[in-house]
Amino acid sequence: MTYTATPANQAQIARATRNTIGDALNRSAQRHGDKIALQYADRRWSFQGLNQAANRVAHQLLALGLTQGDRVAAYGKNSDAYLILWLACTKAGLIHVPVNFALVKEELIYVLNQSGAKALFSDFSLKTHVDEVYHQVALQVHGSLHASDLADGAEALDILSLAQGQGCDTEPELALTDQDVVQILYTSGTTSDPKGAMHTHRSLMAEYNSCLLHLDIHSQDRSLAALPLYHSAQMHVFTMPSLLAGGFSYLIDTPTPERILHLLKTEQLGSFFAPPTVWIALLRHADFVDAQLQHLQKLYYGASIMPEPIVHELEQRLPQSGLYNCYGQSEIAPLATVLRPEEHRTRPSSCGKPIMSVLTRIVDPVTGVACKTGEQGELVHQSPQLMVGYWNKPDETSEAFHDGWFHSGDLGYQDAEGFIYIVDRIKDVVNTGGVLVASRDVEEALYRHPSVAEVAVIAVPDAKWIEAIAAVVVLKPDLNLAADELIAHAREHLAAFKVPKQIYFVDQLPKNTAGKLLKRNLRDQFSHAS
Image (cartoon, rainbow, N blue to C red; front, side, top):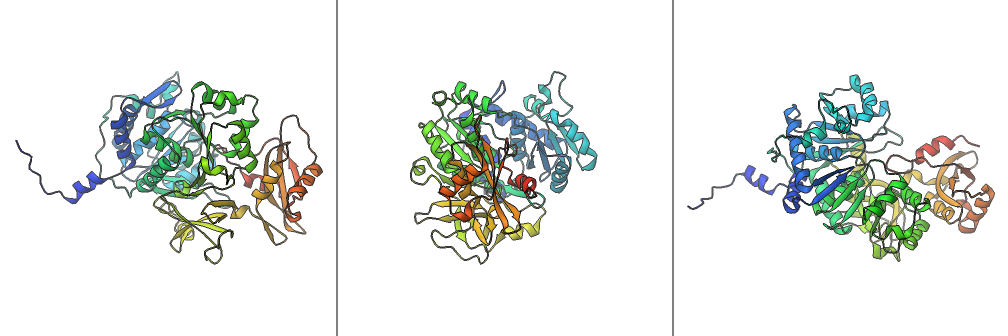
């Protein structure tokens, strides 16, 4: 019997060459089969099992009447069900909307209404919050993520129950394209409402491929996934590339220092990503014993600037670990540059070079003219990783994209070898008496004092200087330090105009659920302090 080929039509060609996230997950499942991909609590999922679970949930979502392009909101802490819902959306042509589980009522209503969410799946522990907003949003479908974990059983519609059920587990056949929007990532609003960055299969797949290369993510990796999956770095820089590469992720929902240190040791996990605030908390914790972390080979950090003294401390206390500085933002999926381990030795304060799918320039933020080597300006990007705009915010989209580049809002410079250095968010630069001072410069000087555990530098109103430099400081346990002593220390390391005018001591700095420092909260708190 011979096979006679028939001429292919465009639809057949498009399907054969398609590269959606769901397609990539299916390829990974076929390649890695019964190998364990994910553990959450006492549940372990193989690559094949995870793919089949995503297929079951995808079919059920479509059976509920959701159609291609509908928005599905996920409101909960990390869980296997949270990840499976996201994967199901990629296969069903639905747009996933991750919602920060710490949002208060008004903020939750805003995200659900602004995105036009048709469905909401949430943690059972957040049911009270959902009940409060349910009649103020236009939801067609609502259910739980993993209420079946509870002794009294699941709600009528529960993602984990669907994933573990007997539904259809074959690949959904839909007319999807790589250009379809697959997720709306809401950026934190500082002076305005949050904006929803729209990402396509294409933008995220471009980023995953770059992550695999530049972050040395391999099938042998055993990673701790502790940061919230609603945060683009944990989901798209680490968890998803690991799934596609064949690596193992240990997923947790409550990332306390004690639990992180315990799991890194007992599970012999070799890689972990966290923002600087979390690494500082781990270094200062009583349970931190260098010898217990001999399996930690890849130490990733990002989401905010790591003080150089902390970089050196990590290198000294974890000499077997390679450090990777990951810089970016949600709009670029989010990885833009990487400083690799071998580059930390000579440039510990750099965020590295642009990854292979990103082109970056430094330009004058006013004129748009390219800056010279060493000259500070705004980072602008061109990349297939970039969002395709902000959801239903055309003016903000136009403001972010002009002259053919995405404008990051970050201030930095580039050295002669092409390495980039982030100075600050443009909005975080202090304009004191007409002189611009980067908060990072002041913070790094204060971190050199042996009594300082954490510090954040902000601008506060001042009658003479218009803006004055203020430092909000957390001291190490059982240590005392007077404000004038710290100011004297600053004078030894900084030009006079960079020395803080005010020092405020606090027990802890405000952070969001991803561990990112909330400077806007500090500005609100201390803007009227004397």
